[in-house]
Image (cartoon, rainbow, N blue to C red; front, side):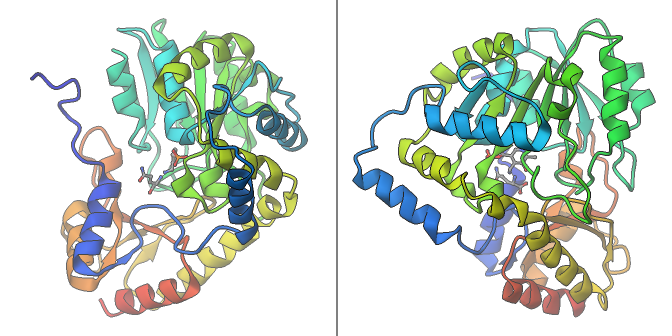
Length: 378
Ligand code: PMP
Ligand code: GLN
């Protein structure tokens, strides 16, 4: 059989979590909290199940949930999305990203990706026959080189995929990034796929700059988010996509046959829980405390931390400890030091190795302390 994805193996997240399990390492690799979601959310799911909400949801998502998403988005970003025609609930952001790409990318279309990038984008582009065009983010601050973006745009650029707050770097866009992007949309007709799953994890009193805050961007964008990050429910796989009606129509054609719909009781629970603004409004402070704790615990270590403006990921250089490649070092750290992490080179198309690894700090204080104790011994 000729593989349609010859360059794809097992994702680094499965690989490292598996290795952590095998070696009894503290798992700071795959991004997920090791603490539970709000108990009220669990009760709401149980209530929904007991009330008999156990059959297929409408394909675009429960009307009430779409309404709540639309209200929240209007409050936060001043963009009013029509819940009937512009909001679609999906089985995680991963499904939304795939459906958006499949909906608009034709064979031969160029899709611009800023790298390092989340690992689900490129396989989705390739399955649609698209051609990924890679533009590197600047190292070490992972800012966008807008001149290079402009230089690589062509008539064939169908889609530009962006991601702020950014996984794996933790970099966050400023208003000037939105301004630069807006300027380019005046010159070229590309669509935008904006992965905003960490929209509520931005630190130091900075705002999240959603593309939905700029009408000229919103009118050509798929904006994707995930309740997994916001509500500590990565295992529920509930996300959504906001896009203008013409794009949503095409998006829903794919969604309809990819999954048809998303787990009904989970949608009921999230719709009810969305009344609670406090949870997402206090999320930056909640994770900032963890970021700062982890950084202070690693202060005496030989790791050199890079700035982290958002997400629940902390990058670190390890050159004072080892000259292994980042993949080798991540494996060594997991097996020998008992802390699993993610190497950054896997998020690049070419093997770019900056000697940097990613820690996930969405963990209980005791987990972070136990990991730091091991890391400070190196
Ligand atoms: N995009 C980015 C940047 C992510 O970090 C993640 C979470 N791993 C996703 C998309 C996928 O989100 P979900 O788990 O909701 O599919
Ligand atoms: N987004 C998570 C991370 O970056 C992993 C998601 C997954 O395992 N597919 O670690």
